[in-house]
Length: 196
Image 1 (cartoon, rainbow, N blue to C red):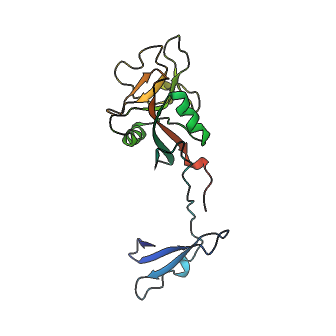
Image 2: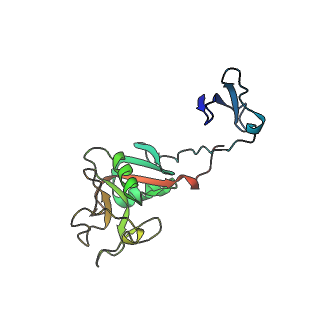
Image 3: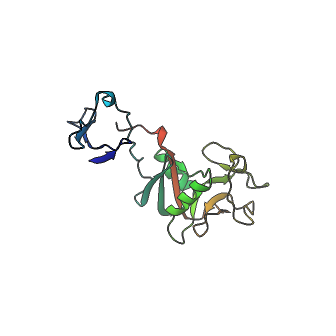
């Protein structure tokens, strides 16, 4: 049950009615301000439909889900090598997180467990040459993606080929890919089917 107050100051309580499996959910106006018809003829039009999106399946048993800005995230604490973490994300239709801006970086950092860095979706495509870090979701270089948050001196060596987020600062650093870390999976919720 939800209570809404419109711009004209009228209040109504609304509920959702779903009569049985296989039928569409219906919004019902249950109550309005005393002495006021809850819906006038001008307001009695087809409502806008907001789809309810189911969270994707968890990549592992010890993952916590959250959403932000139209994206769903699982922070998983089973400490895996980068490639195994990537495989776990992809097995449920997700990718290791790609960070697009400061706000998303702050959001993802807030998911991390205290003192536990986590893999995100950056990697160096060439282990023997200058740093060529890219995002796994589309192969665009991290620098060309428009946002970076490298820690001072990072990326720093050709043998550290995978990107982690430092829980202490939210900055990024490269690290040997076989290191076992927590990881963050991401999905664009617009790509997922709705429940409505």
